[in-house]
Length: 129
Image (cartoon, rainbow, N blue to C red; front, top):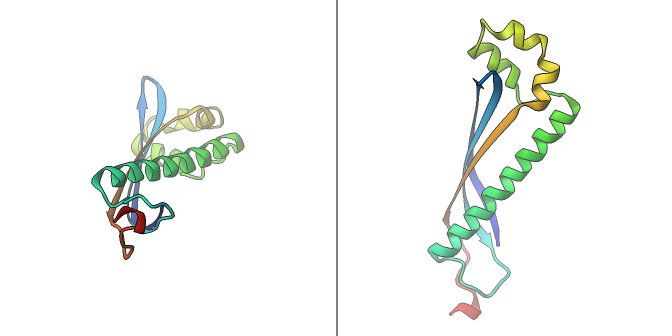
């Protein structure tokens, strides 16, 4: 099945937990199914839930891969440091002094929620009628 993303919203937050910096990325995505290549009826609640889970896993993997690449390059492309600076201004000088060590080791929690709103314009497949 192929889905089309109709809207996606993301939020990033950071916190200090037990002396360690932790980032949280939350993504909420909505889409519609636009194509399918199997003869099963994917419009059921069960298959929509399966497809939503697969879509969420794919988005989470993409984010995780981007974070991994950024960590290997020690490139804070997600501005975690800036978020920490704003949220923990008094502690930032100490964090900044060690940011080259803190950032690559930083724990990042990813939460992705996907919702398929409809099957778009596709009709039930011939084999499922």
